[in-house]
Length: 188
Image 1 (tube, rainbow, N blue to C red):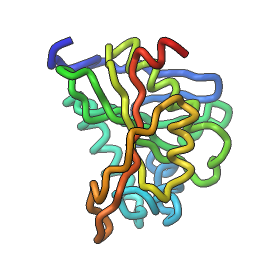
Image 2 (image 1 turned 30 degrees about the horizontal axis):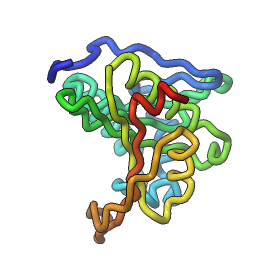
Image 3 (image 1 turned 135 degrees about the vertical axis):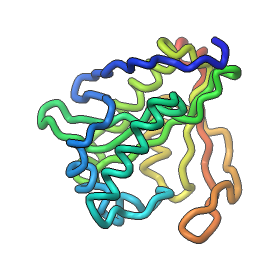
C-alpha cells in the first residue's frame, strides 16, 4: 500500500459484546458521562470535560479525523445496553511504513471487564487484515498499570520506556512502548 487514504466508508466493527463505530452527535451525553470523570482523564492528554460542548467538540474532531483519514476514532458501544462506553483510536498512520498507533479510554463503570481488550483485539485484526498494516503500537504512562496490562493481554510486546516523551498537564511524562507485528499476530 502506498500513502493512499484508507477506507472512506468505514465499516462498523463487531465483537461478541461490542460495536466499534463512528461517533455521532447523539453520543455526546454518553461521552460526557465518562469524560467528565477526573479519574478517567488522569493519564490522558486531555482534561476532564466540564460541559457538554467539550464532548460535542470531541465528536466534531473525530469526524474531521475520519474525513482526512488521519485517524479513526471509534466509539465503543456496548451492544446489550446500546450505550457508548468509551473510544478506541487507530491513529498516526504511516502507509509507507505500514504502521499505526492505538489509544483508548473507557468509562470507569466498565473498567476491569475486558471491554478494552476485546475492542483492541478487533482493531488489531482490522489493522492487519483490512488496512494491511505491518506494525501496531501503543504507549501509556509507566504508572498506568491497567493500560499496559491490556496491551499485554492483546499480545503486544514491551519495547522499552520512552523517557519524558510527551508534555501535557504541565509536566513531561515517560511512556511505556508496546507493539505487535503482523507476523506475531499471524503466529498466535
